[in-house]
Length: 260
Image 1 (tube, helix red, strand yellow):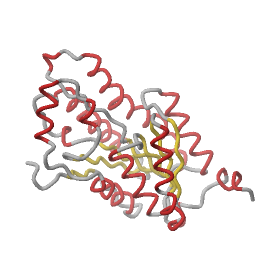
Image 2: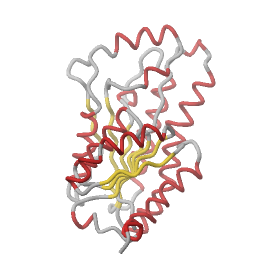
Image 3: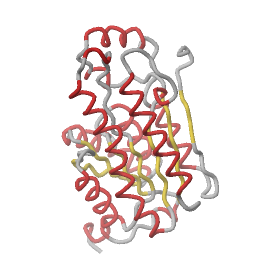
């Protein structure tokens, strides 16, 4: 069997304890940490993001771990705001590996600002990525999981899904929406489909770099003084995925100990 045939043949990874895992927003921060952690654990990861140079670097940096664990990382250019792009992301992974076991919906943006700053384009961007991007992932993966009789959705939301702070009204609204959509998905889905929401507190990432509002950027510098590394969230995702098929970890909130 050729390498190409092996990649496209039905994947027996799940029966060996390994899973085919799709991760959106995998070019940096939490997404990159989740992808790297799962490769180390032997899973076959399809990493999606717009910045393909970052994805290729991630594939190179995880190659040694993949060789040890039997896992893999396949980089794919992905724009979660494009419904057709997300559908192709899921379908191509299914054709490559024969199945899709997990979709980690991590892609998100956070250009915080006060409402009276009227940065409407940035509000729209958060809605497009944080809410519509998640819905596109659900629309693409849910039929696949239903047909397989198994699957696992993991949404990376935020502590902002549970509280609102000044400058974060729109961001928190999108993350509450992500939480609500995922909880609704859990209630509506067949028990064969597991659903998890992970809500991180302050995490070291590039998200704050997109803040253009001066007052919001200043507030965020103090807020992020005691941020935790993204590996903490990767560990939470790993824990949820590792549970037996009859156990569904519905929600995990992870904060640095100094965040109150």
